[in-house]
Image (cartoon, rainbow, N blue to C red; front, side):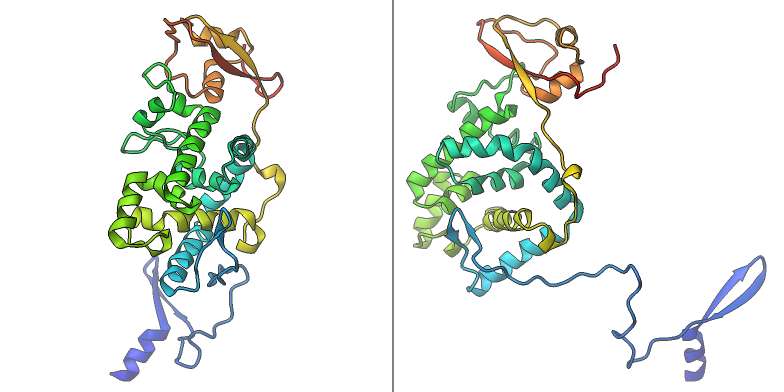
Amino acid sequence: MQILKNILAIIGLVCVSGLFIFSVQKAPSDETIGKESPLVNDYNVYALEMPEGLNFAGELVPVENPDIHERMDRELLVNTYWQSNGLLMFKRAQKYFPIIEPILEKNGVPDDFKYLAVIESGLTNAVSPAGARGFWQIMKATGRENGLEVNSNVDERYHLEMATEVACKYLKKAKEQLGSWTLAAAAYNAGNAGISRRLEEQGVNDYYDLLLGEETGRYMFRIVALKEILSNPSKYGFNFNKSDLYTYIPTYKVEVDTAVTDFASFAKRFGINYKILKIHNPWLREPHLNNKSRKLYTIEIPKDGYYKTNP
């Protein structure tokens, strides 16, 4: 019986057009398992060495603590080996970071907060199940409290520059209340009151000493992992040319202080179509602008030569 099992283990039986064809394969043994020669173009997955000096806004991540080390290692692994998403982040960062960075700097918010936008939305105008919108995932009430127009006709949470200004305002207030940029970033996810309450309940004053739920507990580790990977593409196996990355199309501004009855016709006046107008002005939520209050809006129009449209 054992002889028969050994024969079956190394013989493949294939039926083709009624004929039986036997193919003999070399069966692995205890001595050869794990020592096979690699394929020419095989795929390898490697453990990652923990980088030194990991920090957020200059505030160190205490990876010398075993639980912090494991949680940081998890996010580095997940985001390194989610290659398609990683490449998209590199591509989009080239397009949108130049818009976000000067606004952060102007407001005195550390540059590292651009990576918060990466994990919040993937640098897209995302919509969350809870109703948050845009790159910075701003809730309706928060947007209105901070001066954004939010309704079915105009939603300025989708206006990248204006939304970044609101995010800066929120983060600076959180830093003042909570005492560190790390806690301010965590509060962007869980709220100032939520973080304050947990700090008091647990008798600690640092994010990395808190026991938190899954989402907020991973939040800072995800931000730091994306910062590390996006800052060191070749180190983490991402290969691309600058020409592979996305670029922001230059625009000029058109001011409007009246209603616009038809944005499709409006767009044609500038040599573009409705789709392109909406790509550059996603905060315009309907095919028309009500503007009963005669508010002054600024609409972005792409410069000539970047889009080819049919007449």
